[in-house]
Length: 163
Ligand SMILES: Cc1cc2nc3c(=O)[nH]c(=O)nc-3n(C[C@H](O)[C@H](O)[C@H](O)COP(=O)(O)OP(=O)(O)OC[C@H]3O[C@@H](n4cnc5c(N)ncnc54)[C@H](O)[C@@H]3O)c2cc1C
Image (cartoon, rainbow, N blue to C red; front, side):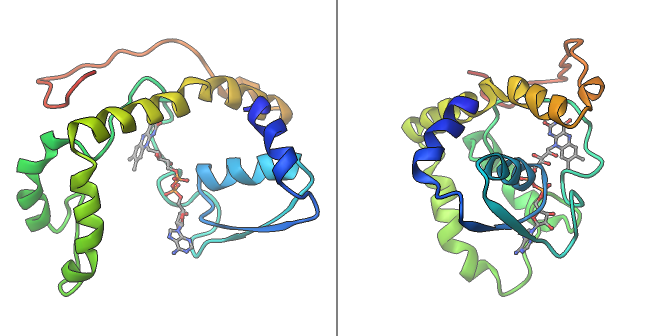
């Protein structure tokens, strides 16, 4: 990541003031990287800092879990998900038409070639994540929060295409 940051130095004017929409872990990491380059950053988030998914998750740095959502294995489950008001996909009535282009893109990403491409892209993002966190945590004097003890994944069945 530091190597990437150095590359960014060439293209990011450090007098710039950046707006970051979303103050979860992704937005915060982007902000820290920009601050390292000397840029100013302002967050926009109606929920405040880390109150979305980044709040109260399981705390496992799941760098080995490269499961993109656009997986053909979820297609048969989508109708059931849409009918469940507490399911992972909830669409307000009337929004379906507006969401159609997004769904079309989502489904097109399930094609074998795109699927492989996206898998590799996710894998390369995850690859150095722990090392990146290590340096962030050291700067925040919070290295004790990262514990490397391995993990055990247990499945009743494996609907996901494990590559
Ligand atoms: C129950 C649960 C357990 C999990 N466990 C793990 C785990 O163990 N390991 C792991 O690696 N991952 C886990 N995850 C996933 C992980 O938490 C997320 O991938 C990660 O937090 C996503 O970070 P983010 O910054 O992209 O999103 P978020 O943390 O959700 O941040 C997005 C922010 O954007 C804001 N926002 C959205 N739209 C707008 C808008 N229009 N204007 C302004 N602000 C907006 C939201 O309010 C939110 O604060 C878990 C997720 C959940 C829900």
